[in-house]
Image (cartoon, rainbow, N blue to C red; front, side, top):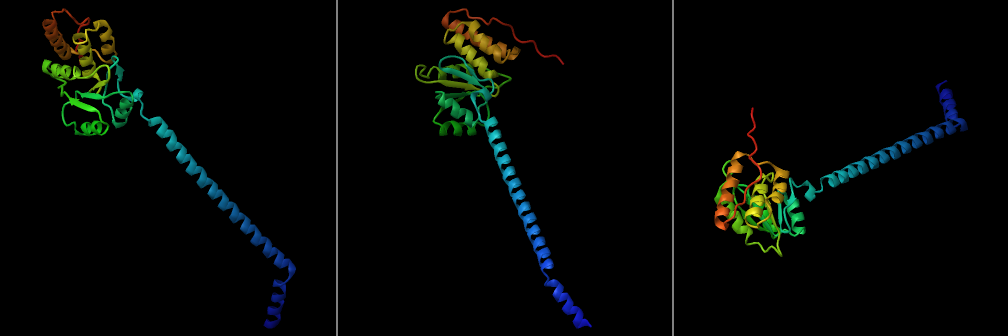
Length: 229
């Protein structure tokens, strides 16, 4: 009896209809697998391109320009001022013709010294205490400025936010270059309005140069009122 059943099953398995059914299942399985594979590849390609595009967009958005340099100003044909530049900004400034950098920030400036040295920029540090700027600070600054060949070189004066820088360039323009105070004032006020400490310092500098040059230069504004709590 068992032999008869086994023989019957063998005949059924070898029937054309069963072979066709099995073949259809194999083909369908292969098609589904192929479709899934193509779908996964397509998704992987899309994600890779999306990531690359996002990276490209981010790079475009973060590409440094002088417009991203804090409080950047062109104060004259050879004078620029700004807040603290990064290495990319220094490269752009060099392309713009800057040859000299005056840094008014006190403390360890080794990183900036290295960056400017690698770019071939002439670096000079005048460490100005924010709470106590001095006439000596400005005279040191002015001495370096007067060593710059104004017809060939360009100099950047910078600090952290260009508050020190704006004050120093204003003072240099009216006391050394003899520019109109009102014109220099526009650039200064576009950055900040000096507080009483800095106003007193600036007045000391002006008094010194007035005595030296027998002139009567004066600031056309008062100190900013101290902020109240």
